Image (spheres, rainbow, N blue to C red):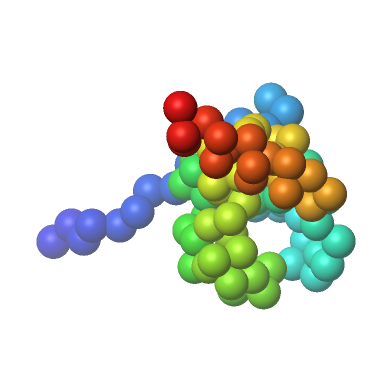
Length: 99
């Protein structure tokens, strides 16, 4: 009997156009999250390389924190992931919703 198993790709295209594999993702011990690393992890989930649960466990993130990264990329692209600009992009997005 054939079981339904998720078929995962061996690699996905990263935010900068480079191929990403599980081995090329940031190491699980990562504590300093720069924009590129966040974007790579989001691209890995969006491409099916890892699930949200696997990412949260691997990097010790909360689901809310990861969802915030996804929202930031959806709204503003990679610049939206910059911690120093969160307030700017948040107010910009709120203004866009008004009009």
